[in-house]
Amino acid sequence: MATFSVNNIAIKGISCCVPKNTERNIDLDILAEDEIQKFIDVTGVEERRVAAKEICTSDLCCEAAEKVIKDLNWQKEEIEILVFVSQTADYILPISAAILQDRLGLPTSCIAFDVPLGCSGYVYGLSILASMMKTTGIKKGLLLAGDTISKIVSKTDKSTLPLFGDAGSATALELSDNAEL
Image (tube, rainbow, N blue to C red; front, top):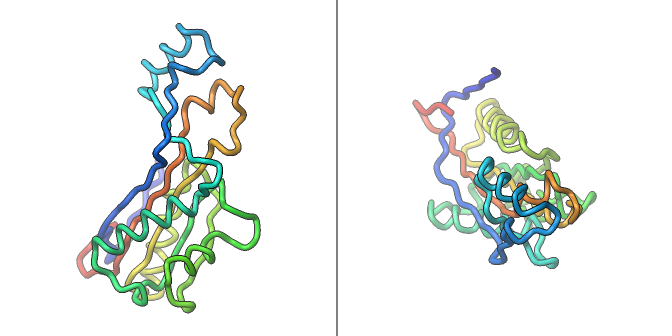
């Protein structure tokens, strides 16, 4: 199994945002009642959060970012890098990270880019962000990761639909002596 560690980088806070709307898997009609109950028993996924059609992945991540920035009492002008990880970015172009950089009021000097990955994306994003901070001396950074998978998954997909919901997260990283990520 591959592992990584980065010295002098600390996770200072994590925040998440989920949509209000929930859908219960037991109510799905794409599987027989015994199949869906077995699915719930095996996965533990009883319900999923589903974003309204006007809610984008960046909306959920922006809310999470605002909360973690406020909770940490960070000044936005101190944030030097933002990495956005999603397989359901708002657009192909422009990148969602640039949109989020502007929406959050981060400085134009802030590095901002997308990483278009799904399941492994958070870990990849974390390693990219931490490594860039360590090698460049960047002091504060944000990893925003999320998806609104409900917008692209088929309503007849028996393997994906009952498994994945919509959410956004923000992880705040800081260059810190004697820390290890």
